[in-house]
Length: 144
Image 1 (tube, one colour):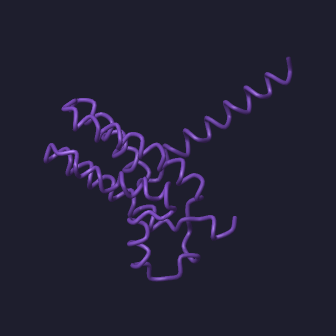
Image 2 (cartoon, rainbow, N blue to C red; image 1 turned 90 degrees about the vertical axis):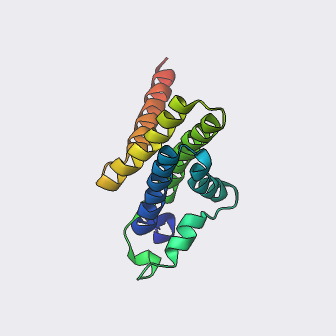
């Protein structure tokens, strides 16, 4: 895989850490405003192509980005779409004072980020299973 198609792992870990910290701050303070940091960064990545958290973290890399092992951009985009969806649901829930749903939605994101930092990518597993499902469905449709 071309190194231009990879996001260096230190940047991925920084993004995951920012999500976890912001979710914890939201839970501790009871304010969903902390969720705006990773939420707007993720949306910016989708809409403009630049995630400010990744951009800022890139300044602290000690080596050229291409020298780091990395995560596939497509996979990161998929994972980020799940995170943005759940962070949006959590933020709206905080605004609506639906705290139970806010805590559940944001906890899912934080748990997935912590598990990913530990070595198991939940989003990767979901994307793989989705691909398997689509393959089997198409294969079965062609048989008939």
